[in-house]
Length: 282
Image (cartoon, rainbow, N blue to C red):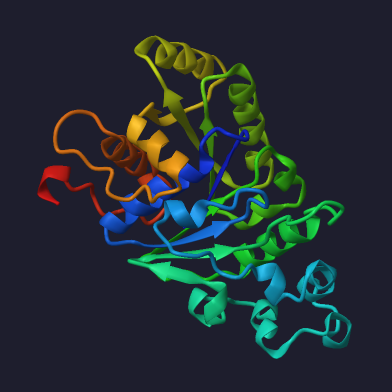
């Protein structure tokens, strides 16, 4: 399964991607996290990795070479280095990538498409094309799931990235702007041919806020996969640049328990068949 996680900037997409990866690992799934957000540089820290991999845009020879390479124009036109030929194959497995372009830890592998590093660098369109083509050609084993951390907003739909995904989910924070954007995400995902899995409501500070957001989403016919309430430990590790791993509690509602509910709800969209295991048994 290939799952795209979308939403407004600051809604917590990377946090949800990380928590999903950890929970799926706990269920004996291997996860490929694809960082397609050209501005957020800290996903590798959340995943507990010491450093990020080299971006795929470098493997492709930079922005100028992405278009001819991915459009299967002549090798002479693209002028790829020998190791870059893996990106031109009709099928790509993570194990095929040169080691510097993927970082793995405890059942989770991270691939970064590219980042904007300086002013006047140009648009991120080549990165979108690379994400779309890599995702389309990526082949997963039966025990593997790919989760794509998308760039904020909906511009990536214009590049057709979601045409290579099985399902799309939206992360919503308690704001009308975020809720409205999630409705647009649903429309665009459906028109791209991907299933819209539903909404994760994040950063919920009270029962009243949860009720108000749920009511607004219901009015717009937006299914809710689950709710992640405000957790100070999540805010703390994000502020300090630490991993989100290990956020488990045996008693009372916790972030770990909330993400379990969301993964259970996603099982109908892919190979999430391993049932949840009570946290007290782990």
